[in-house]
Length: 200
Image 1 (cartoon, rainbow, N blue to C red):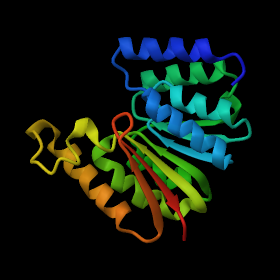
Image 2 (tube, rainbow, N blue to C red):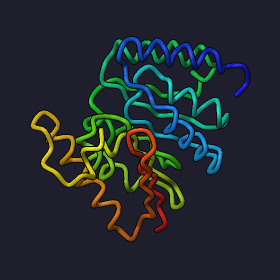
Image 3 (tube, rainbow, N blue to C red):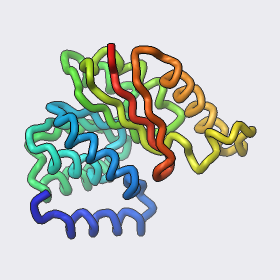
Image 4 (cartoon, one colour):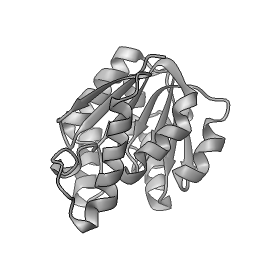
């Protein structure tokens, strides 16, 4: 990863100080291990934030192209600055807006080896249903925070303020775990990771 370690650490620390969600270390290790394993040519990322995970993936796989979507303009602009810092901006297509609205046009005509979903948790199943036909056989979806603070797997009624998130994630996990088109691995690392391989 060249000499970017200190730059990544600085971005990570600044993000945490400002309560901007960036991928946790345990999840980051699994994501980058997957990138190294499958060497994706095209990656779709839902939830750019400030470009931390996108830059990590692109510096790990130097031939990959990234299509990435961010809802907030301030974060998108910061992400673009960070993509330039790591010298990967020429391989990034950055989109601003609601992923549910933008995805149909972005993915039209594109096929992905890796989809990284880290946007609004209650919409994971919606995102998957939109992109499912644009993922190559042998491709993967990597989803972060799928166990959400331990509330998803405990079977209990979630606190009211998290109900939409928890119910949405439970539906999503039920779908991917019970579909023979996928090989799904759920890991308790970080805040919960789902690694979904497309086998059909």
